[in-house]
Structures are given as C-alpha cells and as structure tokens.
Length: 523
Image 1 (cartoon, rainbow, N blue to C red):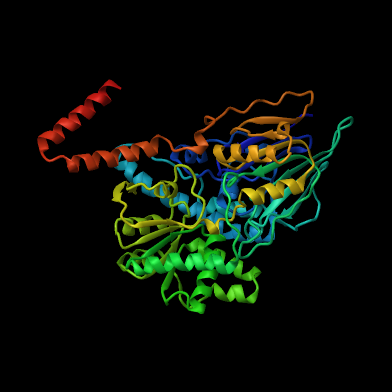
Image 2 (cartoon, helix red, strand yellow):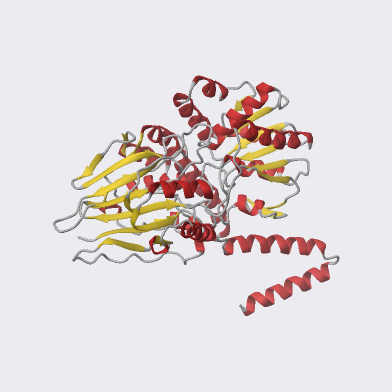
C-alpha cells in the first residue's frame, strides 16, 4: 500500500499545522490546527477538510497552541471517532483552550451576524461551539515522553520534549513495512523551543531517521544570546518608558506560555525594585485558566510569582469594559497575541489613538494579522469596522518568542542527522523557509534532501499498487505568506476617509467620489 503525507496546513505559512499520513495501518493526522493571519487564510477554517474526518484513525498532537490543536472540535463534529494522543500537560491545557476557542467562535460570529443582518447578507455558522469543544475533549488520551506506543498494528509513535511550551513534543513515527518493504522512520518537529525559555528545557529528539519534518518559523533570523537577567532588563526598559510616557501599556500576548513567562519576569522586576509599583491587568479568561495549569507543573518560586500582588485577573466582560476608564499607569496583558481576536482588540481600540500610550508586541505576528500591520508602521487601522489613527508608540520585543531562531534550528536539525531520504521545511513563511534551506545546504546538508512543500501537496514516501485520490489545492503557493485583498480594502477605506478629510471643499469631495465611482463602474 502507498505511504504518503499531505501538507494540509502550515506549508508556506506558520498556522493551521496539519499533516495527513496515509499508511497501511490507516490514516492519521499530526496536529489539526486553526489557520490565523489574513482573512483569506482564516476562511480555510470554515471550509471542509481536504480529507474525510471519518477516515482518520487517530490524531497525534504536538502541543496545545490553537494553530496546532484548534480544529480538533471541528474534526470531531465532522465524524472523527478516534483518539487524540497528547502529553498530560497538553491535555490539561486543552481542557480550557478548546472550550475558550469555541466561545470565541460563537461570540465573533454573533457580532458578525448582527452586522450581516443590517447589511442584508446571509448569516454564518461558527466553526464550532463551546459545546462542540467540550465534546471533543472526550477524545483526549495522555501519553508519556520517551515511551513507544503502538497506535495501530505496524504503527507506533514516541514523544520527545520539544522545549516550546509546557507539554510540547516532537513526534517520532515508525511504520512497519509490508512484505518486501522496509520500515519507515519519520520525525515531526512540532514547534522547537529556544532552550532559554522560563519554563522549558532544551529541545531534544532522535537521530537517524528517513524523513524529517521541521518547522522554520524563524529560519531567517537570529537572536542574541542572553541571560534571564538581560532579558528582564530589556523588558524593564520598555515598561519604564511606557509608564513615563504617561499612558497605558497594552501587551497583546498569547494566553498560553507567553503570558505566564511575562508574569514571572514582571514579578521578578517588581520584587527587585527595577520597576515601580504598577497594576498589571491580565484580561484573558484563557490566560487565567492556563496560569492555573502552569502553576501545577512549576517549582514553588515560579508558581508563587504567578500570584504576585500587583497582578489582577480581570474576572468578566464587565470588568474588562471598565478598564477603558483607566487612562494611565496600567499594564494590560490581553489575548490574542496577533491582535486578531479577543479582548485585546477593545484595548487597542481604546489606546492606539492616544500618543501617551504604548503597545508592546512580544510574539510572532503572521502575515496579514493586525499585529503584523502595526509592526510594519501603519498609521491607520480598522478595528471592529471603525477607523483608528495610530498615535501610540508601537514597540517590539522579540525575546519572548517560544520558537527557536535560525542557529538553534540549525543545531537541532544537525543533531538529527543522518536523515536518509528527505527533510521537509514547514511551518514558516516562504522567505524564512528559503533562507533556512540555503543555510542547511551551506552546512553540508545535501540539497537533494531539502524540500519546501506547498499547501495540500502530497508526497509519496513509499509507493504501492493502489492509487490515492489527489487533494485539491485550496490556496495559491504564496497566499499563506502575504497580506490579502481584505488588508488592501481596509487600507483603501482608511486612505479614502483621510483624503476626504484633507480636501477643503464639498465640491472637491464630490469630484473625488465621482472619479472613484467611475473607476469602480469600469472595473
């Protein structure tokens, strides 16, 4: 029987991680993640899977982040009845993360449907609901690191610590050969950690595999090595400058891992006197629940730091709304980290236009996301349909990313050698993948081994007699790595509004709009 892998996500982009393995033992998924970034990319979450969910025997999950786990409830809703294998900390985190994601889908769609009703457009359904997510939790089964598990006859897996977040894993797969065929040995990196994060050990994994699938999120950039004290000093400088400016500091942060790392460092800075006393509001229900999970697995000092007296968990939506009344001196940590959903959108709406305020980005920002747009220096953005003039300071502190940089990735790949058949570079935008491919080749990794797969591309790892039906490509080769027409549309609306404001007379405004209407009519 043919053995193949299809790249159903995170190919040419960093979200939607999902590999479809079709094997003699059945069909399996490595991850089933949600797409994030531009609206074109996020629309993939609403469409059908490029496979039949009923044919999937099991899901092997690398870690809890939504871009790796977020479509599991949709998979169950579509007919999946198998088991989702993950480490115990990942299962614990998903207990809160998946229902929270379902709640977000419901609330976002409810808001969208109110607008659609006013516009006379058809209503839409959420990708899944909180109830769907809670049902999906029954599929979870915990596994231990370093122990071989037979998932099906002739198909066994072993989990290795990836050092990315609590419970993250690289997954080793061994598929027995049919008569006349050798066993195939695969390794999926998942997201590789930095080796320097607050809560995680250095990433590990086996060597001597046939096929290696490796993430390349930061394949084109390096970070300076720094100690915990140096990292905290950089954070202290940013926070002090923000407080001196006289406004609020808004930190969009991923609720799982990033927020907890920030809190531990902020607690250390408060305790040492490097920061003046300030109120830190954690406005993310998921971050609160995730913090409870982290505290169960941390040593006493780190767990105590997460409960510093300066930290205030925002209990509900009403309390979140009340934060709009705070005009200065507050540090607001809120999700989502890419500024595309969640309560942080309201805090940006309330603070971006104020020159005394600061927005500090501390995680990866996907192409087309609001975070990437702010990072690019945009002076005007739209939030919930309203134009916002960006006058706040927008700062970037990349030291908190949970992804390995170029040199750490290189060292991790070299430690996995020899790789006998192919190395697939995934989970990275195309410039990052191309740069990292060239770096590997320059470090004596044979160029013939290196591959940059596209979304929905299928690669045959062992050929059999039967024919596997092809999977239709859902997006073009570069769509995952760039902004889309929605971003252009938002910019055009903002530019038009500014132009109409700048024009001095109504007659000139009428001429401008007539000219624009003429162009539209000819299109």
